[in-house]
Image (tube, rainbow, N blue to C red; front, top):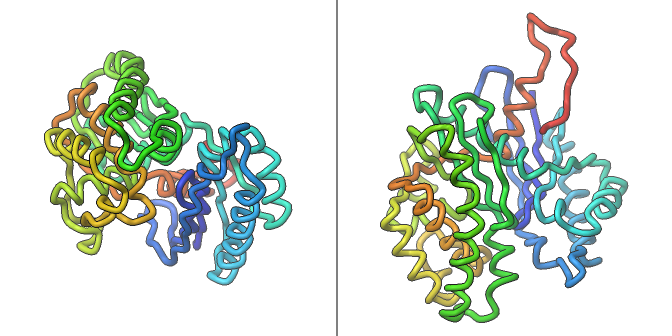
Length: 321
């Protein structure tokens, strides 16, 4: 069947169309996205501005039409931290739903972590043993760990690269004091979760998803995306610490000149690197393997799992989370 996933993230709004069926890997058929950076439309009252709502509604309305044109049988639309944390998030989605008919579901932070973990598990397989997965988004950091497809523990922290850049940096490049304060804040937040996660056992494999980790791996020497998804990519603790220090001393324009760094993401990469450095240090991870699958693929896989099967044709379809 042909599925569509509409991911309303803090940085990017992305429609991904895939051809898939139960028991098979989803094959991308079409992609349409825009870097709306919704966190930048949050006002002092934590509400999304009228401009942000209009731009989101316009994109979603167009994405629904594109999905129809591409023959999508089932469109799964979901929103993450930018909309979830906005004071007027419910009203925004009601307006967008009425305009587009998309029926957008808001994922909790924990469900983000769980579904991303599912995608990581399916990509690396059972032979990976206990997995520890990190995902740095625009609005939040997700951490999950476990030996099964459902993680033993899944947490979401308000440590997204876009959120931290907006709330913690006033200069470009940020001042040394701003960087130090950010580092202290990030490490304090993450340190509170370490005990709850590692008490289940040490990971056999540590994995990273998200654009932040992919960009850090690329500037540290990993293969470019043009080499394909099956090329092994990783990021060492030493390289992460080096680039976290270097990126915070560079301007956004200087970061945008680095290999694999897009102009739209350059401004928040420094804060993202501080978070990446902190998780690797506090969880004592020497090397992270970069997984090409993340939340969108997790949503697709969960939906495919819920398709009626030969042994259970009347199984009801629950919500994504």
